Length: 406
Ligand code: PLP
Image (cartoon, rainbow, N blue to C red):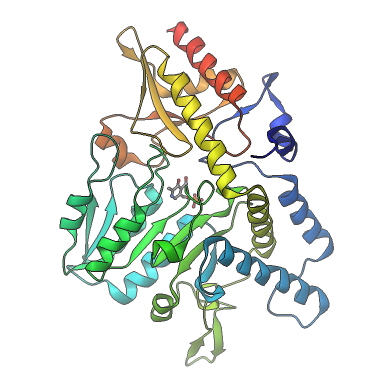
């Protein structure tokens, strides 16, 4: 599919050691490592182009603006949006959801209205809606989850009422690796005339995301989870929706004219982009998407699918190891039981770390899901395009070694 060893050379950090052991980086759902192509693009822009965008008549400003706007087009093509007017740059998924919760909420949510989220949401896709509900006297409703980790779609359909204003649901669970049937979720919502926001933070790095095919009304993702820099993300919104919504923050860029009496706002997408954008990060994000595209998102998906399958097979052979849900994406959450006791996720994570293996432990910013599972936390291994079977072997050997200590 692609030359894994060659690809790994693009990521210098993968060659480093921790505690004098080769780094095995399996915390990719938290953030991915960056290829040279992305880092070098940032260094090059700061060294050779840097100027504020959209404001200057001078050469550098125009060049920086061209790079920034070309990045918007790159994002549009990557997620198959109709127009660059539908691509709003944000600081990340969290800011994209907060933007929508504020803007959509101010305009369209009133006392007694309802917002629907699912049991397996990241806090970023719960708290902004909860805050909105508190502001407006609206109600948050939750799509239940079945024992196997899938969302209960029948229950979901029955949650929708004439008061439902929006459904916001993750495409891939950052804890369970569950891939939710977002097209179906959107179809059911649209039957009730309800728009849908898809949290694509954990899907954009792993599977082809096509907003038109999905027919979602909004979608959010973060650059840093798809090999891009921190501090940049995207809110996609159908133009017809974004047109109806008020600005999120006020400031430069988002205005057309300002007097002390009145301000008129800029068109899409700038209406939602107050202040100087992180134009170096947007360009670097485009480079990251180019990197992914050059390898082929289908190839990345297939590589990660095989690796996850392999990891599941190996992990299932470890005595006392329990895997949560039915992982279909590159995320595996587990606990290990020894001598009738569960090895605390923090102990497992800390001891794996001493072996050079970086995993995530805890509630993974999904406390309500932990409550549903009746646990405090898990150990989570999450894979990226550069992970290898050898690294999975190291993880499994590490788990066995830690388990023996208990
Ligand atoms: N949504 C999901 C499903 C996530 O996994 C994450 C991050 O882990 C977020 C939202 C928040 O992303 P960010 O912190 O980049 O805004």
